[in-house]
Length: 444
Image (cartoon, rainbow, N blue to C red; front, side, top):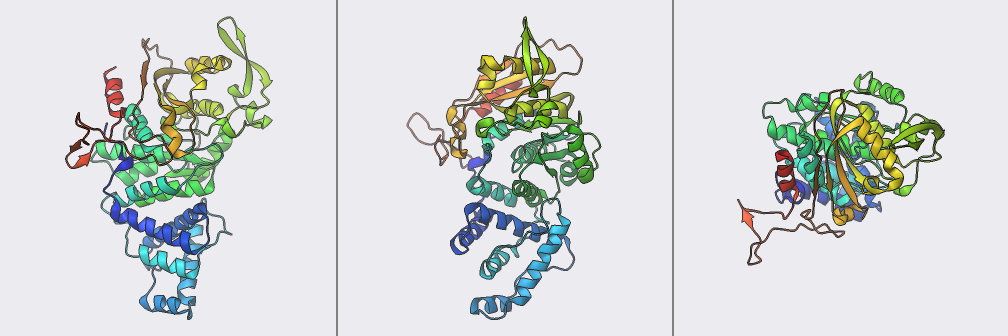
């Protein structure tokens, strides 16, 4: 496994562009951190829409800049960008409301357009812009509603364990800003040199995200990275599977999501902010019912629970989405592996899937990303009727994540016996266990 990319230092130029924009808006427009990010995403969508057009409108001329700076007539620039945003909303109507407006002052809008007009995302020959935006998001995007963003080393580790193939359909039903999907794309690009990346993204990458603004970020990341449009659906992934399929049919011409996907990677929202109590929704799930113990087995009753934490419902939904033989990597709280009250859940999982591996993460893993919850990684393969003589399950434990367990998440580097940082090929080596665990898993 390659060293985690979270701490790479080769992104200064494009990253500086994004940081300059963020800092200017935050200082001059009285917007919150979240609002600044939302406005940046809007303008990036406008920029991408304009790059698809023959006649370009995303620019600011020198004369317009002078007028804006001197407080003179600003209508030509402002009208052009506002009209461009109206067209952008129609183009990406699943990500924008018709009432959405640009909230930036004319001076800030001019600053951002001037910064971005010299960049051509569509014809970019490398992924520096995508890497820069990914790192920029790591600094400024925050989770909520029980969500927290997954550290890149964890994401890359899961992808290396699952090893997606170019002909496989991949989905994350709680995709957030698209971390698992993005890493899967990079894995495919690295290991299958001749693949048509745009075709791969448009036909093999799928994600579901309940938050409109976060789904916008997921989409824009792929546009920046490879000028390709992934199948990101803004929806609650836990609604009835038929209703969810209908939504995807309208967006991506999929008729039935059940059993459609080969690979599923996800970090679902945890129940730290409360349980799901909607009776109609819970009644659709086996794990939304009470389970009674009979001998060594558990039998589902007809009694719907008063409430269930979302990540348990996500386990069932994930297994629904996978084809027989499909592979799953999921982040779960440690209590789901240990609590006696959840023995029915573990029995349910073993009845539906073969357990490939469990990897315990240190408590500080997610502290830089907003939570200190103890979690592990569970890797499964959905049963397909064949008898598998795999009696052993891979177990491992990550001790060194490569970054400090504090709010800054500063990188930790490997040192020699003299206490000097080890450098190979001009790069400082991150002190992490993920690479070794991937090797051990492949040898298991």
